[in-house]
Image 1 (spheres, rainbow over the protein chains, first blue to last red):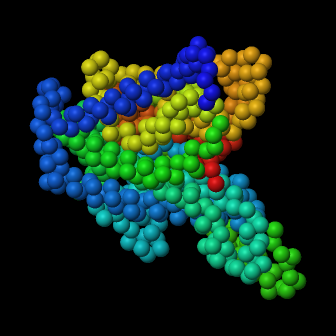
Image 2 (cartoon, each protein chain N blue to C red):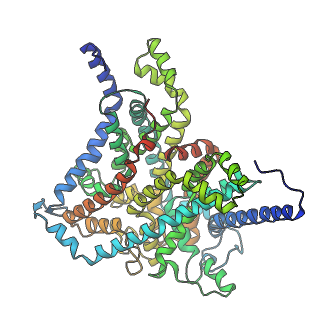
Image 3 (cartoon, helix red, strand yellow):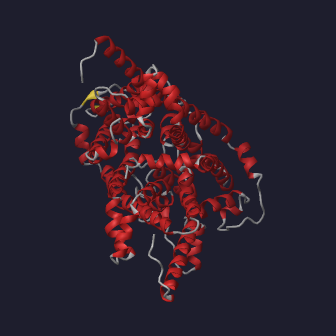
Length: 312
Length: 285
């Protein structure tokens, strides 16, 4: 950059700063400062009434033999391994189907998208009700066709798969992203493949998939991040299925119902912090979450060029 | 598109079968996607006794449930709080995020790329990471138990909103801005007079997302307002209706339908801005 008079540069800088000031303050006050505090607090022990007392690595050692933490990590990992790929496959499947429809594609797109508009709490209530073991319509229907339905949200084995069903139902956002990607595949590629005699599956395997691969990566990373902070549906499903208070005096004692099977990592963090008031330990858990989430984010940022777009 | 269909009848029949098959799958899936919502609506019109059975169809119709739920539950309060939260947060977030997004998309300055990466990090990292220190901060000012901790941060931009707006502003050709600058417009004038009118679809999408986010937010209200029921929002109230207030299921589902209805109405009016916005959040192909 060529040197310009100091006055001009200062004025330009001031203008730029005036655009950015609110956001810079926001990032500092609501992100960097609490992140720094969390790191510091993670080496201390305190509750809402006491002042932080330095305990060194105690909180991190405590993580090593916390059976509830282990369970919550297992649950969150399960969600990462099942929830994320199932949703991606479902979204690709739906968008492929939509591109194949010659009639009413727009109508079906809206229909498939609609559940994504339902507030998560409302959707969870609906699913707990639909899947109620005794009187729910789903098991009622299964019984009619001769299948003994599972206990869904009331069974430790089926509670997480029920959450996956709920996530599949609200797949609209992901579907729209994949639909845009699939429609963006140049049709000349398909025509060439068809001339070479490739069937539909081969065309999907060797043309569609490789072309939308960056979108799959994006969906996988954001999906993992989403799963790491998965809270609302697990909290509400556990509380409502157990038939107990969700926020009696603020904190539920029924998170994780049944038998801790829906206890995700963030739920445990919340419980440790705001039910047991073990704020130092909660911050150590937060830093653990931060490290994992940052690692996953970096995978995406390494492909930052695709993400940040062209220069202005 | 496809090769000229051979007159061979076999191929013709195969095509027709495939057509029928694909549309049948679509119809079956469509039914599965709408059934839960239809079921909720039916349930909300039953008597409280019938709502406990496994019936799908109301024996008698009770639209008055939608009136009763306003009378026997604190729904009006929850609704008001949710509207206050969602509307004020959306307006403030747009006011504070548009200039930042403009700077990141269209102004050249040192540290622009690192700043953008920082915005992405803030957007991606789970909110739970900074929950405890933030809660302590708000508690120190005596603001927990109110909507303030949910609304005040909107004054200082939102990472996702900034990201989305920046992606949209990148699609506006810089020539328009250069022309304005040559005409002697300062950067703020350029933003207000030239960029804002062109960025309306992007701003609409960002605003919609923020509104929906606040309307649906459960974690924030649970964290900051659960200690004071007069500050509860819809999602918090819904989750506790049956268990805390022993509200009948037909009324719970009526409230649930009321919570989703505005979003679906808004969607039908703003479908294009919406779909465009979602596409913007993804990779550029």
